[in-house]
Length: 161
Image (cartoon, rainbow, N blue to C red; front, side):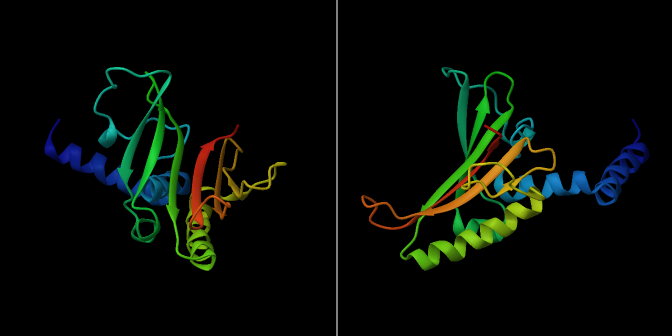
């Protein structure tokens, strides 16, 4: 393939991402949290399968989005074995105060709204967002349990249970 044809294909893919909002939204969501449950593992994170694992395995990856990184240094992807389909994205962090936890939660909820366009419509009130087709759900919850020394923000983006 000549360089000219390769350049045209790359330009087409780039322009298509602006024309097709679904492609642009998915790329943004993957950039924010590391992956999109239900999608194949990004090529940049795929270094083969672990030597010993069950039906799933996990990868810890750094957060790329600046605002997400200020809250969660990294996220944990749960991936099906051997298909390499992302099942869920999770992250947790302790905060000094409940107020700081809620401020961070609001930032994360705003970011989730970019990738998951619909408010959650099911029975479980802890879920906040869902994909257009309802196959992916997400929540960001601040917990201050009695045995926790500090409030903890938990993020979970998952295939619908």
